[in-house]
Image (cartoon, rainbow, N blue to C red; front, side, top):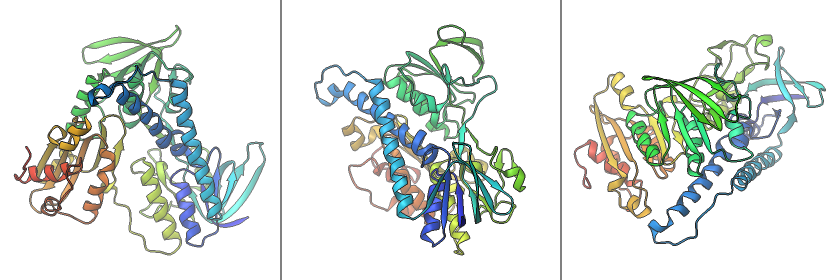
Amino acid sequence: MNYDVIVIGSGPGGYVAAIRASQLGLKTAVVERESLGGICLNWGCIPTKALLKSAQVFEYINHAAEYGIKTAEAEADFAAVIKRSRGVADGMSKGVQFLMKKNKIDVIMGTGKAKPGNKVEVKAADGTQKDYTATSIILATGGRSRELPNLKQDGKKIIGYRQAMVLPEQPKSMVVVGSGAIGVEFAYFYATLGTKVTVVEFMENIVPVEDEDISKQLLRSFKKAGIEVMTSSSVESVDTSGAGCKVQVKTASGMQTLECDIVLSAAGVVANIENIGLEEVGIKTEKGKVVVDEFYNTNIKGYYAIGDIVPGQALAHVASAEGIICVEKIAGHKPEPLDYNNIPGCTYCSPEIASVGYTEKAAKAAGYELKIGKFPFSASGKASAAGAKDGFIKMIYDAKYGELLGAHMIGANVTEMIAEIVVARKLETTGHEMLKSVHPHPTMSEAIMEATADAYGEVIHL
């Protein structure tokens, strides 16, 4: 079969690229070795949010008395929570199957590998192999859980995120290694359901990519929720020979031994660039990523790469945007390159975290003079009514021209609020314009206006 475009991988980068290619009149196929939708739909973004929602509902019920509601004591059915999460993921994957049919995209099940001469070799589950040709081949093979050398995952006692989503029974205690989005989301989920959780983070702050004020607030919230946090600490070894795990942790004050049922390794993701034909085709890599230009061309004509296997944030929405830009360029359109400094990041623990643009530290390092405003949700009427007063919004502006440099949010539902900032930055909105844009009351979102007012010395409600 000869195609205009073959995409290897059907995650949020691959399947979105395939749909856009088909919309633009290109004959398209997708190669997938497991389930349509990739890790995000099946083992990442979507099912984790289902787990977190169950934890949030359990938390609400346990605090119902604070809202004037009497309930019997709630009990979490761990197996049912896991089952619901898997059902949500399966439904989403079926949705992608429907989209493939609707857009007349051929789905080729098997392991895809790029070959020289614009070919893709697909090895099916039964071992049979077949070659396909395409004018353009897009590699979208995604990432997987990073394995630390002294923390080899056995899938039973030392696990990655995939096993963490389908454990047969709830552990009584867990050590989470790493406090990025994956680590803190699972820490919140398990702790809320009653597991004793300790988070071990190598860096000085948890959620280390976030603004330091956000990290400090999450630390306070986690401690209040009974989650233990060890920063500037590293796991040196884990002894799994007994019934549980004995975790040796190196801290500033010396070695400590933690005992737990399960160790979750959440030290980030690594790109799936092995065995996809890069060496045979001659495609360049650097620091474990495929080298591409601003339109995702590799160094070999007709071969492209997007998503977690190229430099840039390893996020589903980034992969989707890259896929669309890539195929629009292939189709002869003139897309705008992606602005990687205007990508929102969201973490769905409780309280939620959302951010975009410069942190305060990065903005100062870039030489900006700053106007910074903060508005705590403790001063928000809507947050008080909702019983969600933890957190704040922090707005960062350039003092000279009023450019909106960054926004950092921690609190209930802030992941639904960050898009306003992304659009505002795209439109080059200034602090003055943000301040004079009337926000509805009472809402959590009016804290964006209030934080801006604070930056300009005009705050009313503080």
